[in-house]
Amino acid sequence: MTAASAAASPHLMNTYARLPVAMVRGQGCRLWDAEGNSYLDGLGGIAVNTLGHAHPRLVAALQEQVATLIHCCNYYHAPDAEKLAQKLTELAGMTNVFFCCTGLEANEAALKLARKYGHDKGIAKPQIVVYEKAFHGRSIATLSATGNAKVQQGFEPLVEGFIRVPLNDIEALQKATAGNPDVVAVFFETIQGEGGINQMRIDYLRQVRALCNERGWLLMIDEVQCGMGRTGKWFAHQWAGIVPDVMPLAKGLGSGVPIGAVVAGPKAAGIFQPGNHGTTFGGNPLAMRAGVETIRIMEEEGLLENAAKVGAHLKEALQQALGGNPGVKEVRGQGLMLGIELVKPCGALTERALKAGLLISVTADCVVRLVPPLILTVAEADQIVAILAPLIEAFLKE
Image (cartoon, helix red, strand yellow):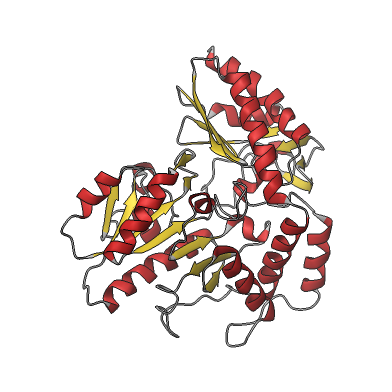
């Protein structure tokens, strides 16, 4: 397939506004298309390719697993599932894990947990607090929890039972839930990804944890995009020193192999019983091996420290290169999850960056998003700035 033929795929549903390129090979932080052109990967499969592309240790482990056992149903124990669950609970300070295949599935499971938690307490119509600009997935329930009218349009009626509040406003949260005995949980992303790289403040995270303790609510933190070392800690909420009751994970947990997880603490770990929830492919041996090896390699290669160090360098370099431009509202984010907000919609920059040899995305219309592999070097970070900053400067002059 050439780049030209990749622009239109007559047999695929028209669900993606694809760029006119077909990627066929990857190595480290680089991808190559069908015509041999090379690209620096500033997108990491949208925060998925934690270890970059074709990491030799991951490749060897997955080849071995494919030759041994790819899938086995959940009637039977899976040794690597127990191994991965033990590791995740240790890293999170929590107790139990349910494995699925995607972030959407993990978030859907979290919503079911919250509803059952309410029903178990005698609440007939449980309500869950969610946030403006949030994105939790595209199933009907997760779409309803999402705070984006554009992606909800055409799929009404949405699921009821959600109370929406603004970010970082504890008084708004208290007011929206005052006197309401049906609230069972608060659900948010520590750093909103699709919403535009919007961070929850550390003091706010602590305030919400305290409020959930006081009211008997579940604190459910969606770490699908901002977790797995991306900010320099295993999970972004750990910068606030708090522990959630429910934590959905996915994306970077398997370095490209589809995997999702719901990690639960004592308040939520016993809610699901056999028959309440399940999945055909969740916890399969291939995905579990990918998760085990991803974490092992991250620890042995110091990738959390690398994400913090290289991310800080990249953020500072972008601020220095773009800070004086009135068309740049803010460079924000933490570690290797950064956003550059411009004063006008900038979707055109995605294809312009592609032509210049850099992969990025634009989210929330006006925010350039960078979520590269956690193996990114300082030299590669400098290359991102050298390519991206002039493109932004030129775009803002139009």
